[in-house]
Image 1 (cartoon, rainbow, N blue to C red):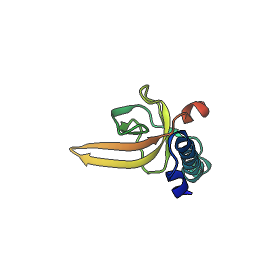
Image 2 (image 1 turned 90 degrees about the vertical axis):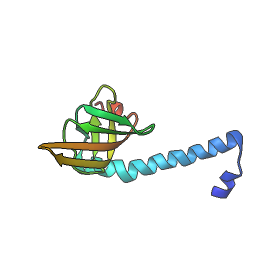
Image 3 (image 1 turned 45 degrees about the vertical axis):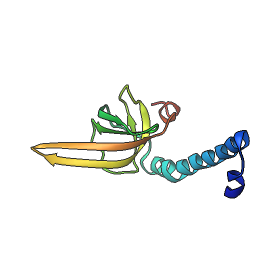
Amino acid sequence: MEHAVAQLTGGAADYARAFSDAADTIDFALDNVMPQLVTYGRPDDVGAASDLDLLGADRISFMPSVPIFWTGRLVFISDPLVEEVGQVTGVNFNFGGGMENNRATVRLLPGAAASWGL
């Protein structure tokens, strides 16, 4: 199948790749999002996103108002610049000088916040 799709050009190639993208989205939802929802319920609000970095079209890094302690978790970022649900893909803790910093990297799930009424 991959070989056949690789031979396509133009609109036919775009059409065939769209099915692959849709399948990847469904796989991600079933493998990553659904288990989190079943186990932990709706995403927790982690507040504002200070020191926000855009890492790509759907990835951000920031310091949350509420500490995040594990990856895989679904969170709602209620900062006006983001206001979206995402899955935590990385967490970094820094203890030094009497201060604790928590930084999270998140894959945003476009449209999730609106669909869950957050």
